[in-house]
Image: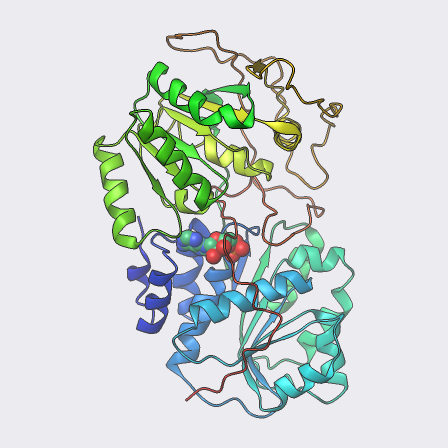
Length: 469
Ligand code: AMP
């Protein structure tokens, strides 16, 4: 598997990645970074959550460093166009995170806030400007900014920009850019109008796409256990004792939750360790090695931390907390049933929130999972009424093949268990609508690796307009 070392990125970048605990590039990063480092245009089909921001930010920062020149007044060397203020802020944060050791000058140009500060921010020129198309044009038309020195252009979430009616603004912006530039174009979907836009902007682009989720999830037996919140730790310990566990991966939504689960398991006499963003790289490697060799059979992880885990023989995935993004569920349970093996996924569902997440999952996968009810009688919460799965899945979601009633009861069963299969998920979808990107939480079942922004600093409100040395 590729590692970030293989890209020979500038030391300052590698250092920042290490500090961020990035070990393994995601598939979109592994494909995009080497090509972009060569200076080629790239057209990438990837959604938020796949790590696509780093896939363009890292090679661009590396190339900026190879030729570090002071930007001219009222110009930007890198222009990133994104559809929303939130996404723009996240992209700027990413650039600043990866560029934290290089005194990067960077700023935002987004609508909905007064322009004066943005005018001042670009006055001296910036290396990286992340903008929404409308505000960018305002700055250009107000002579606060010239686009003549842009060396790198990124279009992020191009399909969404078209959905939001930015096509004309984008065309106007592109017409003002130098022809000689590197363009990196990302879209979650590639319908005809997006492909045409890409064609008009890119020169001999390399195409990259994240691979569809494999159909291995078909071999996963899924159980849902409704339980009181406070009873989850005991139930988890019981399950891990009762089930024929080879290796179990337990998912929690938060880092703190992961640590708490480890403590409660240890109390119950089940050795377990946690990996998450707060653990050192060293600790993470030691833990993974112990999990691989079987020294520890239970690993507790957050979604981000788990994405680098490439371990065969995970017999059980337990969702201690259900994810609020349904695609994350599919990705989590895909950690079992690898390499032709069969796997079990058990979800502990407590409260109305998790019940509604479960319904979202069922709508996405088009499978209704039978519930085992272990809630304390009398404490059972009134469940909100079930919404039936609708034919096309959630608006903008990929359609998963219907496999209702499929029963995947396989292998020895120790106790009563309801099983259901997740349908195989098709590949790229030719459909423009998709869920809105909200704070990096939106996702798709299109990509194998799904990352969720965790602990991302919310510092994009202010301008990090530091001068380069
Ligand atoms: P993105 O798809 O770019 O929005 O990234 C989603 C989240 O994954 C962000 O919080 C990133 O910081 C994180 N991330 C991106 N690449 C990696 C990686 N190779 N390893 C761990 N986390 C990553």
